[in-house]
Amino acid sequence: MNSTLFSFLLASSFLNPTINSSTHNNINNVINKQNIINVYPKQSDAILTNPGIGFTELQRIVSNEPSNPFYGGTPILSYPDTSTVYYRWYWDQLTTSDNPNLNEAMLKRKIDNVLQIAASVNKKVVIRFMALRGKGDPIYDADVNKDSSGIPCWLVQELYGHGLYGTSCHLSDKEAVNMFKNPWFIHRSQEFLSALGKRYDNNKTLLRIDVGMVGSWGEWNLSGYASKNSLSVGLDDNGYKFQNLKPYIDAVIKAFPKTPKVMLGTNKGDYLSYATSNGMGWRVDCLGDWSKGWNHMENGYPTMISHMTDTSTNSHPDVYFNQRWKKAAVDFEICQGSLQDWYNINNPQHLTYNQVQKTFDFALKQHASLINAKSAAIPDEYQPLVKRFLNKLGYRYQLNHLEVNNIVHIDDYLQLKSTWQNLGVAPSYTNYPVTWRLRSANGNIIAYYTSKANIVNWLPADNDDNKSPTYIVNEKFKLTNISQGKYFLDVGLVEENSHHAKISLAIDTKLTDDNGQYYKADKENNNSHFQQYVPSDDGQYVPDNRGQYVADNSGQYNPDSYKKTVGYNNALYAKSHIKTQLLQHADMYDMSIDKHSKQYVEQQNNIGRWNEITMINVI
Image 1: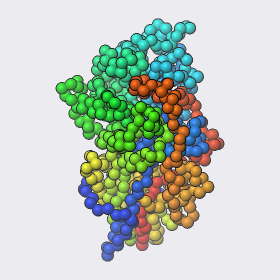
Image 2: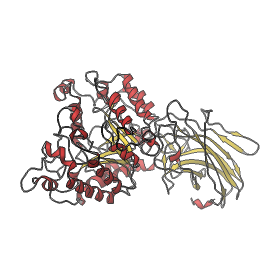
Image 3: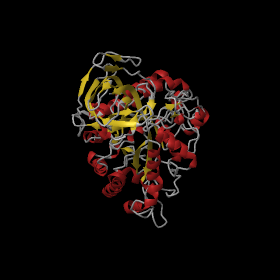
Image 4: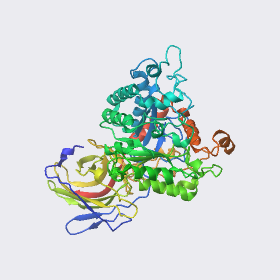
């Protein structure tokens, strides 16, 4: 129970990257004459739901829980489990129409509520703040004037002389296009972001800020408001210079100094490279766009990435842009409304199986961590690709080998030499310290030891052609004030300054929760992936066999309707229409934890991630 049972006086820890050429498929314990045991945990190919990696939820907390306690829609059983939820708020949703100050009641009902519920079910939140709605997007938020374009009416009045006193809050195309250059709008934006930062910068549930505020949907373009020609919706095409946009980046840096940040990249403009050179990660929209002619996959992304480091054409190049993933995240959002859209052969933007694979491979090559797949159904045919993809996306830590003295005298040292690999494509950008735990046969926690190793530094291979480096951690600590007997040695990657294990390792061993209790499959709730483990008295567990995915056809759209509402030849408008459909519920944020949700919340908080590694004898 008390960590002081371990003496830290002579504890030591160091890392030595090497290449590990051997693999072991089963736990294999080999004991030599010096009472040293070598443990090779069995590797696992399970999809791991860990903080800050994988598919995200969009504008909801849960997609695939059948009872779906936090969202009113039909559960999307084919969508994988998620650790991260992605939310967006327009400025006019956080202030009243006639008061420049953030509205306390609106903040509590929306942002505070999402952060509270996400934390209650062990999820993180990514937030984007926005100032300009997509052209024609519907408004469902009762707090917002129905003619609002994204900024509150009082600000429209300050900028353009209308918006209050019975006049319309709606922005004309010209007003919207030029708004972000307006010095007063910049000043008010800085105040807005500063107030939000004071309230949320220290929130542990906030994974990162997606730097928005500029352009339609906060996506750094003027789609719907500038010329309908898709080549002219960029900021640079509409008179914007670097100095016009730099203040928005600086404002977020100043307002959220402790919160990681990502910023959208476009194939024009020098502002993303300025952001990444100042510590931000980057993200892009429209992953999977293979449209005929110009498209993001073959033209947009390569041009953008090349421009970031081009000292001849970029006024603020980041020559280390291609290495920034080692310290800051890379995120993607899929093009179209869902992977079902990719699959539908009646869709003019249908993707072949090979294109889907190339799409995922591209994201992995860029060392991505999160993919916004829009909480929509995933075709059965894509499940093998999705599984392979999720098993590489972000970080994936594996304990390959532990060398430990399995017989220890009281007041002597337990010596651990552990070998680790990151088999993903990115590091964790948060340290979850490696912690060892001694546990009695009845589940009582006897002692903890937290390593000095920092997993943020455990990088994966640079590319698929390289082997992931191994990281060797040597440490020893003294066992004092402990009774003789046999004890289980567990390992967990814990939240800092706690003993709450948060990271699932890519090994297949017996699992115990933070209280030292084993798990087994919960057969009474076998329809719910989130009920996968309950305490077991017999010391055994069974992995979840429900299967990650269940066939779901609810994500299909009607081809005839698609032709009428989107059209075959206007990819830009298609994207805008799909965004409109996705954002139909974007203003409906009021949620609460009720009796229906209580069991779900308790279960999520009860799931620990401690791996039983071996047993030691204290004599």
